[in-house]
Length: 68
Length: 189
Image 1 (cartoon, helix red, strand yellow):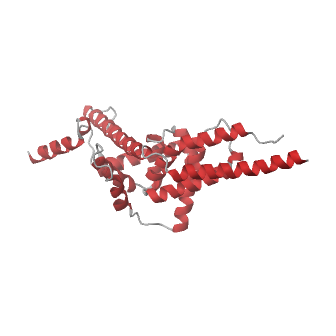
Image 2 (image 1 turned 90 degrees about the horizontal axis):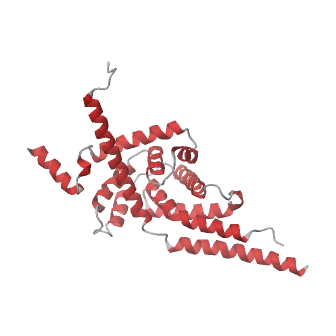
Image 3 (image 1 turned 60 degrees about the vertical axis):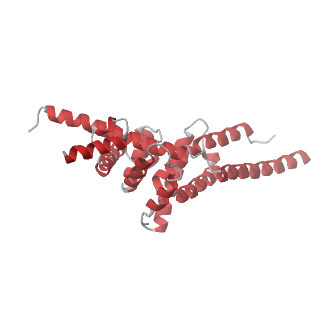
């Protein structure tokens, strides 16, 4: 039926695109607000702990190596 | 000499740290709850750390972490069974700690609307619309076709548009509250 796009539907398409970009803008704003909360201290501590555990395991290997 | 490469381990840790704010924002957006999100991030850090030998340096650390977190989210959901979304109160109170923040009220509405989406649509629109992934990357993270991601995003947008009652014209005003007032005024007139 609508072989050619009607002017009205072009208009609607534009309005739709505007609405979509408004949705995306709100999504980004929301997402950004969470990102700006920063990294909770416990995650930094966890990474340090994992790192330290690995290093001490590595050092034990190194000591064994040098003892041989 | 040790086979370990301390330099690459440092890079791993640094890249992981750099991705954390984005990863956490994804977790919050996906799960709808800060405490669930933080548990997910914590589990992801531990899993990623344990699997760091599987990570190929130079490949996309962010996508790798997001994939781990997403899988963790769905496996926890399955374990718990379908959980009722009880997020509104919790999230509202968290947002309300910054009442001076411009648009905080709009964000609460947006958050509620986002929570009403099916999770497959929610993750698709978040990954592409906010986390900064290309369609192809999002498809890889979600383990589906690119076309599926696109159609999920379309459905998510339409649903959000419907829930938030966003019309194309109303969104270019200087202030969302002002335009809401204007809309009401027109509706009355």
